[in-house]
Image: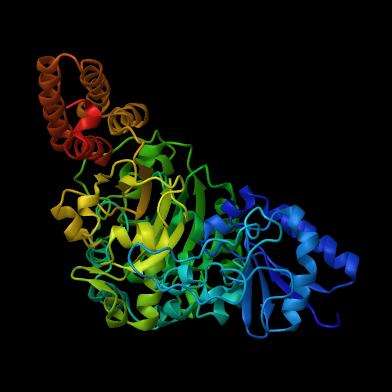
Length: 560
């Protein structure tokens, strides 16, 4: 073979967990054995996690996907990859096309209908050669998405500055460098961007507050990224830091120019070593290239960025506990006021947003506020990368504009449960989110619509449970989790969660004593009201959400 064969194997943690490095080694061995010049790109994940390890081959027609590929599949797959690269026609001999037999038409994405046909009997998953999925961009799971934040993830080499620039990178920072801070803040405000965490606070208002505040003499303002992604069922932050780290760097640099900050920190959870390594290297390369550092993008303004790893505390995902940890103290929640925008890191004005919020900013500056507002509904503008996990057939990342429904995500993308049993409940928004019953699966996924039903969108994480789930047990776990992870500063959280476990136990263990049970249910509701109204932060204030939603929507699981 005279030309170079270009293959893509993800370096994302999800792919590494199922043997991506071994697949890459096996591909190198085949290339060496057959005398083929191989360009093996370690890209990010496309977010089709049930197909990892996903191997893509560059062809004249575009990239073609095979997966899931195990190391032992590579020798048999190698001739097909070589033939695929040379011929943009149909699938190579001996490999099943999408749907089997003749090239099947891709299924239409309709409500309740799976987006991928099942593999033919005896072929595809576990039945011989890895399944051929055709052109990657035409896989329905991807084709039906609206990727703004994740447009490059899975496409480029995450650490290649050339790749990043060739795919539109730095355009937002260049636009920001040509403006003053007030103009940048105005653009972000008009876009309607809201924090992609639990509070969904408008980013432009927060930035304006920091821009108008003054740092102490001899001190500076800060930009801090909360990358302590600890919610169950969430992985978008990790995927982006591992798959497109320069996007986060660019967004934080734009924020620094907007508010006049000169120092920044990314606080990454300790369970993300690959994200820390990738981000640290990306910061070093971006600094050496002049995109950040003493002269940000030729603006004459400085911004120095640092990566810090947390120590395993869930509550450090709360912004003030994170600041305490960054300052080298025990991660406990601060009372507000003062707000971090006025007295944040080291007592100075600080912008704090999470990864997805900062990552949305370059698109807004490059394309304009009106472009971004063209996605979403009402006050929920733009897109959100939803993460589908739990008992689901096709777990992965789906970036769509606000306004789609949970039913669409569960069935059109997720394909229903992995067990094949009916879906019973979906926890939306992490371990502090509510359990959403089927009667609410058609409510539009936007901040206001979910608030109206007592639920939260949060970080966009979904955890699916089938009809065997014990909702009383899950409610108990919510209280137990809070008791274990509470920083201990406030009584409603520290003591209330412990009492919550005890009360739920008394409800479930007294099924033959209806009077006792009803008394305990009343006590549980009173306890939850106290925690919601009296806790210092969302750790105690939101723990009642999963408890009460389980109690209200699934009373039979409590013996009621």
